[in-house]
Length: 245
Image (cartoon, rainbow, N blue to C red; front, side, top):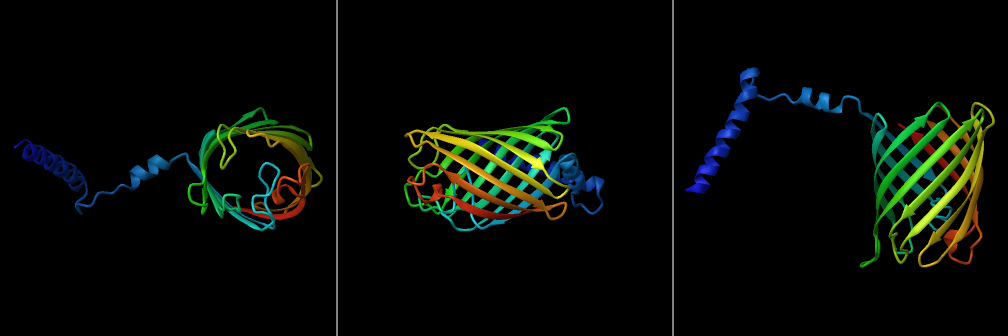
């Protein structure tokens, strides 16, 4: 009897909700477009697609010397943003892609100081069974511009990274110099410390060409001091093309 009463009340509520739009709209079809418009008001949406002859994450190759395709979509409002990302990889766990979901914020202190901090949940796809493929990273960046020169700092920390790696911390310092309206030169040096201990130092140097307002071409050399760790730690020259939408 109680169940019948609950069903009756549920049907009554549903009928009332369905009848309300019908009274406002002679067609009897609810129009939710205004609700969606209001909910999305103030949000900005963007996307990015990239192709490269190799890859770099924390100074080393993610694709073992092979090419990489990456894509991302981002929704931002005021200082906050959320982003979904996907890229091809060749991980030591047998993975062939990595997906990620990021939540973060961007702030500016005057016209020359910019901050960006985000929490990123990553999953390695296609890995061998029983592999540790899910992990979280906290990534923060800061930059300060002096005329045509920009100084940058980056940190990436994970309490428990993928595979056998537990706690991991990477930091990098870099600089970029605007050479013209289209060309800029940049470089950086960083270090990654992990548990179990597997520390290495990485560096890069290269140039970026703005092909147009939304497309850029990056030419960059990467290397580390520990080629003996793996093929991913070797030196390489990478050509990368990015397109923003």
